[in-house]
Image (cartoon, rainbow over the protein chains, first blue to last red):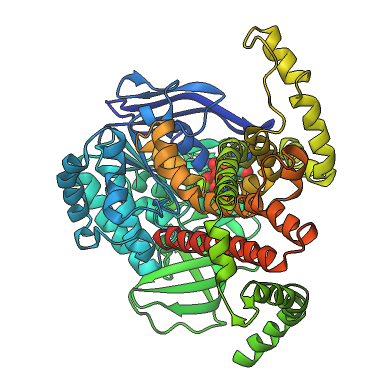
Length: 364
Length: 276
Ligand SMILES: Nc1ncnc2c1ncn2[C@@H]1O[C@H](COP(=O)(O)OP(=O)(O)O)[C@@H](O)[C@H]1O
Ligand SMILES: [Mg+2]
């Protein structure tokens, strides 16, 4: 069955609990009745397009922005009325926000010094934190002399050295190039896991979200559309928005023309498509399918579609076939490895299992 | 590339020529007079100048007044610049107008306005007596304090604007990062905002000090002949005493101080910048 609730796996432990948070800027509602829970030790991502309110939610949790209404409960303590410096929530900012007038070690020491520790007392924990992110040899450098990846490591060390109750990271990888980004994602995830840190990543990159987090909250214009683990999000997207935002898919619109034994038959402008669904006859729907679930040699019981091959992309680890229907809909068929024997322009029949059809009711 | 930047550098020629003809040339001629003795070059006017006790008093007073003016302006300007950097829309406009408009008023109008405030039966004295702070009128006009207060008032925009522009450009996530790391507002200010705004403080202080050390109209109007400053001494040497070597000598001393301030402040700004 397709999920109706936005939360498939409620954590036993409500470590962070955002209750009914709302925020407007000059009358423009950015967030309205936001509810969001994270368990202790969980790595969670806020995933959504630019401007959907991810940073706003992060800033509200951190205490850098005051919500109009709602409560923030952290570890059973209501921190809503506490200023940022009393919440013990560390933030890694999008541009890292390292203090330009301080050295690497002084940056990392900042939070401990702010907590009243003496210069000599901070030495050991700062050295340990720098070693943790493999920046110990840079301790006395000015931060302006660091590369993007190094700056990020320092920002992480600075945020972790104070043993925060919660770590918030706002698009921490967006300033890094692709290769470095993947390395840093793996490193950071391992580091947070090993220390049992509860962390919330903000990102607009679905691959990044799926890579670094236990659960992903997909946000759309100030609301959480679905909050689930990566495989559930991908296989059972709760809405057309989630289906679209998480992973590639091809969509067709139509309406249910038959309903039998939990299988709905949908009439689209390029033929009939069947899906596992209880939706009744007449319901306007959107159907879709993931590219890797499409086969170029369909069996008779599959959904079938005629396409003309438009392009063949050999990407090494996979081959992507681009097909165009008579209705100009673009379909992708992703096959593992290098495939030959496909020629542009030929007309072929593709198919996919009925159970693999993603179906959502849409406004008529 | 080089040819192109050279051609762009040509754009500076009119400005440089203007400065050379209108400013540098007469200045050099003037300064030359200070070392031009009856038979060849001499430093005797300098030795005489620094030996004279009255001149020493005036020199120290000028330095003291300039320093205190700079400090007073800084103390008033910093919070103002801080508030302005946070201000938006109409409030920012109000601040700017309030800051810049008095500059167009001219010092003379201001000085007369102050005399209303400071004189023995003026507003300040009547108020002080009314609330019982003093028994009789306090002498305010023609004092060094009045001069410092007046000068700081006139030069305030030159202190506020550089600090404002630095604070305005300060990456707002830096104080936020400090807060999220547990810094109280005071810790955040002293360890992040203040150090990062020092280049603005240095620039504003250099402006204000340079203006205060060479001011002529303000002391003439506020303290008159009682408490002379170097500029007034220069004017007196040229206009009344007709002693051109003396006037040139004092000018050279003043210029040396100004050059020192400029070099020192750019060195300081460079050092602060290098750390960032
Ligand atoms: N300080 C602010 N004033 C006015 N509007 C804001 C402010 N901060 C954010 N917004 C608006 O709120 C919405 C959400 O912003 P944000 O949380 O930064 O989105 P995201 O981080 O998901 O890209 C955007 O439409 C943005 O324009
Ligand atoms: Mg954002």
